[in-house]
Image (spheres, rainbow, N blue to C red):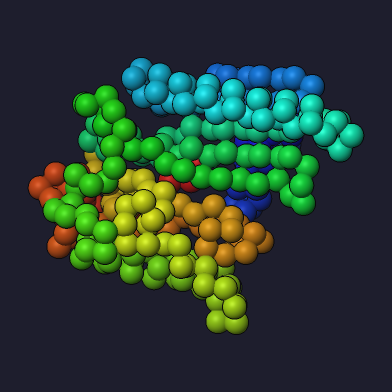
Length: 262
């Protein structure tokens, strides 16, 4: 069973929805697939991404490099230690999933990776891409704010809002950090490189974003058993720091589930 199907089943179970047999939608065919005696690698783009040719080409180029790297490293590992290398080889999956499309111009993409190297458990990772289809390039959230200096007022306010959202989400899950000897939030910094992977959260107002969604893989802000965290900072919490471009794209309220998770 692939990462995609495991995730589909898990999300359905959480929602209290169960499907049997043919009710499952067919999984999309990978856009890149490599299978050898050492590794099984796949890379998949969703249909929305494919509808933007420049974005699709960019993701495929990155995915090709990813697949080649995993193939080489798995092959080298098998050659160097064939006795202990798992007979089924390693498994790596990468999915590029649309999180939101804002104003027909800004496409937020979740890059979700799954890795099974037969350790204690498989691992999953998340990163994000913000694509400006007008400029045909990847960008950061920097243009949406008047300043984004490391440790400056914008990133300080943003970090404070992220921490509050994470702690609220943990409380909703019945999790408390009170007795933990680990500072799970120390790596969330007041810089664009340290704040965490971010997307534009979908809004109740068509064509707008409701704020910023932040995505943290297992181990990033809590023990592995706590899983992944996806939280939204509504745009109004950052309104004093918005540039004219930011004021133009934000509006409305976060959707009922606006964490961008498929």
